[in-house]
Length: 370
Image (cartoon, rainbow, N blue to C red; front, side):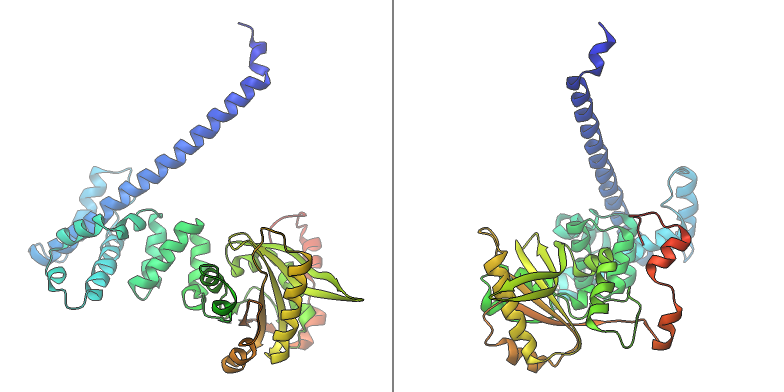
């Protein structure tokens, strides 16, 4: 058989298919290995807790267990004393949290650790925990106050496939406490479940700690800074936001109007208009945004798009004033604050190089990450 046949399109397509199937099999195998190992960790954590409660081996048995397991399995890295302590802590965090939540349920509290561990394995709880990498679990347990908050981050990690760095960023920015907290009129202007989904996508406050602005910045400077750092801005906005443009022009009658920022949300299937205000919320801002939403619905919204949503980002806002302002608005919108944690003194700004100047100085290649 001639080797020339191996250069045909048919062969190359078949080879490409085999490579794709192999990669999928590798990913599936890695997930299964992770799940099996973490299930073992869960059971080991229960064993450790129960032995500490019932056996008379002294306080140093965990150190001895580490030595013995590492001697027997030298190629495995999970049996250091530190990791065994993490495994024990991981198990106790959820087991004690579930027990404490079951107020008045003495049958749970009296269960031996290994029996409780088996019962929790049968639930959806452990299935979720073993679906994410081990060090994601360690980070979540070390930073969360209770099981409810921890499971929020577990679910978000599963849904969005967060890396550990993204998970840490979201936890340090207190995403759990900010998501869905904005003042909105979605319940009155959007049908369920669209209203619930829209409510969850808006945070309060937004954390723009990746920006460095002077204390006297204006709206255009804020707008430019956010789009200059669009990757970090999209991460803060959350999953589903697709950037459409800045200062998007719309003609209404004989006049031109310009939207600060325009996005499309791929899960809600709608345009999202974001207006920026550097001061306190004023009621007239809601009326202007309502006008913009009407214009986008008339000029940009397609037959399959849901109603356009508006988000007003203000430096400060009085919640009662916002509720009054939105009460008679018929377009869906929400109002949130934003925070800047780093501000430069105004007199330093002229002496500092711009992002473009820094990139030129250090030879940052076009298109590379910041």
